[in-house]
Image 1: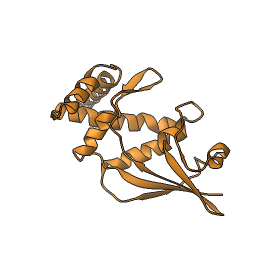
Image 2: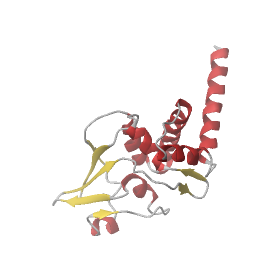
Image 3: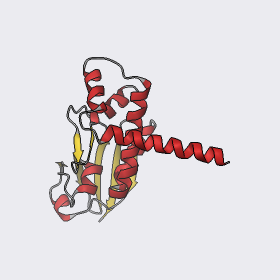
Image 4: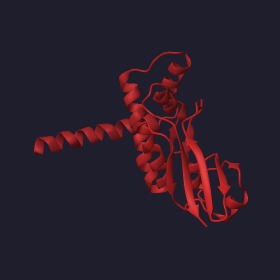
Length: 177
């Protein structure tokens, strides 16, 4: 039992170390992989596994800031049709007033909603608000910096979509008035 515990601790330490290596070095391994993708080359198993681990790490860290983002991103791990959730986390006067497709900046005030719903559409009935969007990773050439601390290039997650390891889908949040 002790031996299994030691192996698990070592595996977890290697996993965490790998995520730090990939996310805290802005022009390191992520840039190398983006260059390979841009030149039509395939990534090796270590690179694909590391990117997948970064996705899971971002989901884990995101659960403390934006649990909706985590829920949406975890759902990308398997194929399914549209998802529907009941939640009122997005019901804010300034957002409801500006119905339509809206993107929010990543500020402390907007962080929870911006990460979960960047580029959403609000619809309204007399009793309900609806937000519909598609969760997917676009191909982005430059890294997104989070608080100038760590970097993630969503183009890497786009690659995982193309090889079938992440699955985009449509979702709807419903909130009663």
